[in-house]
Length: 336
Image 1 (cartoon, rainbow, N blue to C red):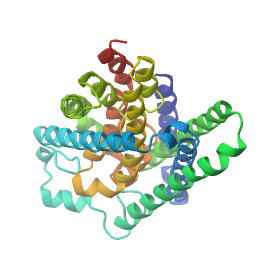
Image 2: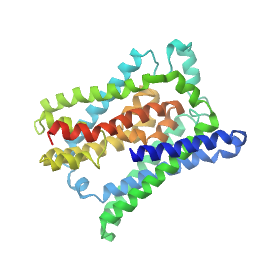
Image 3: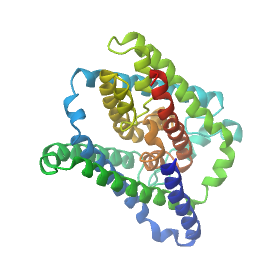
Image 4: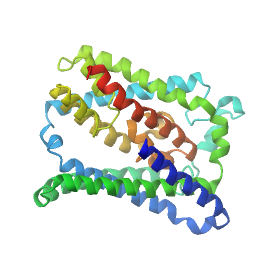
């Protein structure tokens, strides 16, 4: 809860600042570049931490393949759950309500970036999303390689290193969310859009949790290495690889703990990469279900750039609800 309050404070402060600077909006074009740089540096740091972690390095065999399969199945389940919910609520793939007077043709015109635009981020449509995807991939790869080949051999106090990098990532996220808030404040359209969304936003995290539960039960019945309870515990990690694996291992489920760690790492990293690639193909709200709890922090600027500003509300709602449920559901299903 402390991190949620911290992140939202920086975003609201940014929104307030941006709303006071609307008259000088033309002088703040550098915010988009700053946002992209922050994303790349954060992913780089995350990659370094992965490369220095022995669990990641030594569990890339069969456990890795099983974790990858689980990740794919759960991401598909999340996307399908959101799609069904979206259609039941009368929303199109871009997150607009059909009963608000917007026809599919009008939505295409509004939602699809025209030449020289990218959903409000100042980029160039598919080119901007492709640039972001490549920068994320390169940053992650460089980070993992640097962590494995350089940091591991030179840093003796890994606990201290993790503490410092964790602080840097938190600080970077605060800066990033402040920039997002400023961007929203400059445009001045988010509050108006939120009034139209209303309580229906909570239907999406509920649907994702339900879809995850049903899929986890099936995984437990099909995958011989995991029981249904272990499968549920792994699935309820929702990409939180610093909490769920430790909880599962401490409960005496060592194999499931290793699978959980790999799955949650795959979930967060693959979701980060896939959001800008799939946003316009499968749906704006759908991609917010890909990453799990990261949807409420590091993925917010990625969602904002790949879709539009109002969609980050869905991303934050899904990530926040999942983050609140992980410490409850993971030990609960194991009887810990």
